[in-house]
Image (tube, rainbow, N blue to C red):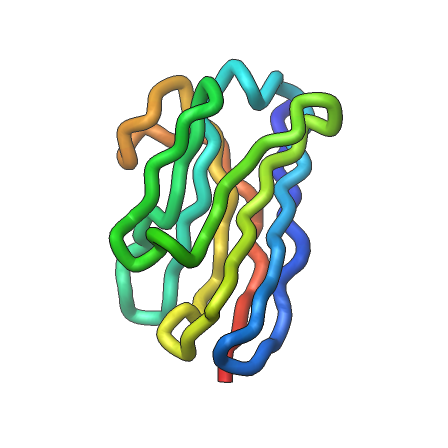
Length: 117
């Protein structure tokens, strides 16, 4: 049974930082593409960052501010978010997929809310 459990969301002032965590069970995360998505009410879910095999790809709005990483020993994927802006306010989801296409992720967490004021 695959489970992805996010944590680390919260409320922060603009310019602040948060680190989101995604603990994975039921699959070996480093053998999959791991990603973070976000969604705000009334909008489609959008990809934030993804990583596989040590490489990383970021959406334009995340470049230079966010960092995705994976701790193999803990089977945990992180999203470090710096210089947060009010427009980063969203529910953030962790996802795992066999490939890294944005539409290919088939395992999802429940999400963690990030609010930037």
